[in-house]
Length: 149
Image (tube, rainbow, N blue to C red; front, side):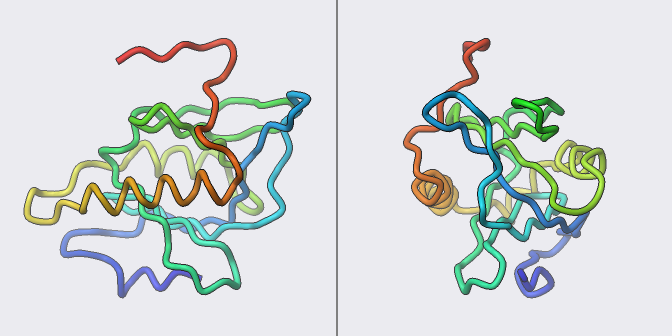
């Protein structure tokens, strides 16, 4: 589990902690949950993700990297789609807990004060690490959607 108290900066508060899995789209287009469960901590400033029972440094996605959060269904799986400013997206499904709670916590994130800004290089590296870990580069946009900035 993520020791979130040791990682929090001044003014940062934990909004929720969840056991999640990411949905992956197979080559035939079918959506399937990944095998690995992740420990997800949502704070008012960022999302931290780390595989359970593994000693990896948590991936950190600061709030300013998250462009959009929405409840959706992929295949027959209810999930929260987290769209990043890089146009990658994560489809997050809960192993335990209420999906509405995760959605509301992610929606409540905000920018930290400038003195606590998170290193953009680290955030980019963490996004790339997640993409590589789940075997996709880049994660595709949903077929029914074209993203414009």
